[in-house]
Amino acid sequence: MAKQTKAQKVRAELDSEKRYGFDEALAVLREHSSKKFDETVEVAMNLGVDPRHADQMVRGMVSLPSGTGKDVKVAVFARGENAEKALAAGADKVGAEDLMEDMQAGNLDYGRVIATPDMMGVVGRLGKVLGPKGLMPNPKLGTVTPNVEQAVKDAKGGQVEFRVEKNGIIHTGIGKLSFKDGDIKSNFTALTQAIVKAKPTGSKGKYVGKVSLTSTMGPGLKIDLAEIEGA
Image (cartoon, rainbow, N blue to C red; front, top):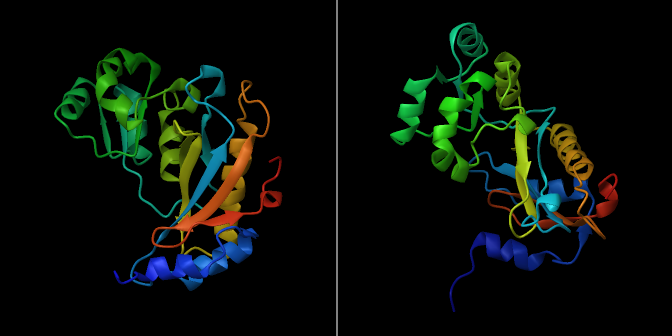
């Protein structure tokens, strides 16, 4: 018989059907953390939507009040004064045609791509490159904007994108286990409230079906939906 890993043993010990309060779930994750590195705390939400239909797509941005604990690398398509403002705000790479060519060559190590409206003629040529990675600038998400300075600050300051996958699940990190309990909980609240608020018109019946909390190496714990305002 194959030897069980530590993670498998932990999962076997826990009640897979139990619905945890957020504080209790976080305590369990801390108890069973690897201690070898700072694990990411993650949320998975199963939604009653079919994203194959346009009126059931769930997508948006939310600023996590306690940040993500990650350094987000940001690229900005802008010229002149806007390019200078983007650099001053902390953008990692700013350019126009030169940045486009760099990305076409495969240099796509970015967590967020932002563009001013006048640059979309250039950015549009990168649809097949940025689209599959979810990096294509989008005015609905605030990544096509004349205010690139604020967009860069938001990206660097803890703003994250959420987007439902084809199986109806949204999966997003909300911080690190090294964060204080209250900071992780405030991020959890901000994310779940934003997703509930983003309920699409085409969603019928129960919208939030299940919510789970986990960490990089930890077990997945079901959260009591009473913890989710509006669920």
